[in-house]
Image (cartoon, rainbow, N blue to C red; front, side):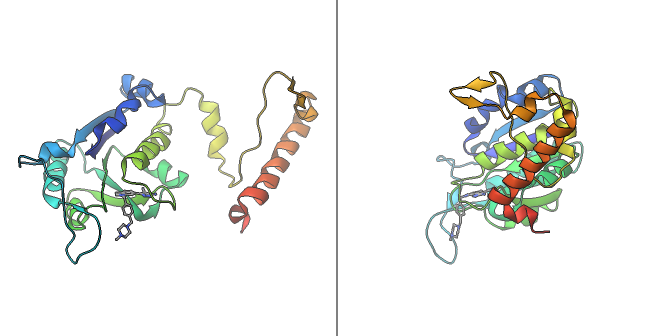
Length: 229
Ligand code: JDH
């Protein structure tokens, strides 16, 4: 998979080198290219923002540098890319959408800042590929970079050969819509706290039942919305 990220703060993506995805990158499974949007400006101050038409607070990202950036990356692509623009007004990015996007050949992430990007950029990008506006959740960030890091990590670990332990993905793929059960490791007694004895019993049936019960209890407690249906 090829991934491009366009940002005015490209150094946000430096840690991709050392994360889980660093190995996938070395193995040639993911080709990540980070671009500074200001490389597609032409004025002395490398301007990427301007005041909003219609008035209001803050600044909006100008369309021209985005148009040149998208053209350059699409021209350099072997397929029609999927353009993902993180946005507080986007569809919610879920595990199901991460799975869908993990099958794409080429993802291009456009990281906005300020109050966001001139709307015409999304219309234009739709002439070059598929366009998705996506939100990572109902809270407000200052820009798209942190959202894109989260999406790259979620998508990247689903690409075959990326995760070290394939069994952990098999377990996840059941996607039963419940929270996970609690995990424990040695020592069996730590600071006065015991590991639940069933986990030391060697009774695998009892372990499975206990874990499923814990999933339901925690889901009811913390995420009753998941149990609605
Ligand atoms: C991309 C810029 C900052 C903040 C709201 C302001 C009307 C618009 N889950 C998520 N939360 N936030 C983002 C995200 C935030 C972004 C950008 C993603 C680009 N920002 C920003 C607040 C608003 N808006 C103007 N008012 C007139 C309300 C942009 C995100 C994701 N993914």
